[in-house]
Image 1 (cartoon, one colour):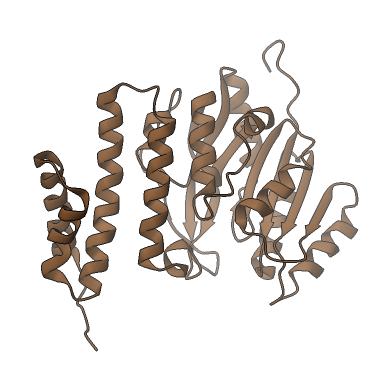
Image 2 (cartoon, helix red, strand yellow):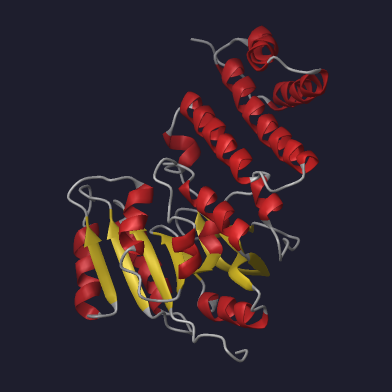
Length: 313
């Protein structure tokens, strides 16, 4: 540890919502860390469909003073649930773990070593495995290393999912304003982006956690219309946070997001049987310039080429 560096104490925040069996795996993955966390907080967002609350209380009884639980009397949403746990953090570093994911045994050790080796960085993030509902590994997310240092522009250009493998200084999380409760589905992305404005990041190419892929994920639980609206709201926040960047870089980030939103709009139109309108309705709505029309046409053509067969009623 570099001279003057504060002894790291890691608090792990785990979110819980009707995932009792997965929650046990998440908790065990934290308990089995080679470097034990300073504190474990499990925030339950009013689970009523299984015995999640009993599972949490059981672990609290087995590990008194180390594992703590928060039990909401009504559903408060993911960001509010996470924030309730952050208010109890006593460590100087934080890990936020979803209740259906798992840390590998050297997650904390690996991240603390990277942060020790790079004292200029206030956050670290690692590669990860994707696993199926039964916990079998499907693939590694990234086959090439991601950037370290000033990663703001990289994250701003739609790099989501960093929070799942992130270790961040608690004082920086507070300075970023905790999770923004306006962004129900993308609170983790917004917090990560705000952290990237405040500090440098260090990346670990080794996969150190496992993200579970199943049908209750984001893309399966909200409508196409709501997904588009969420991305539009996120884009507005991204542009606001990007004000310090050169105008050309901001334009590039905007175009990346517009392309992502356009693909969703086109896919929605195709799914609704409005193939002929998929291009023109979006073009009219955005009042596209020639440059943006080229972006729109490229996105539309890709959606047409990749579209699944449409079954009409």
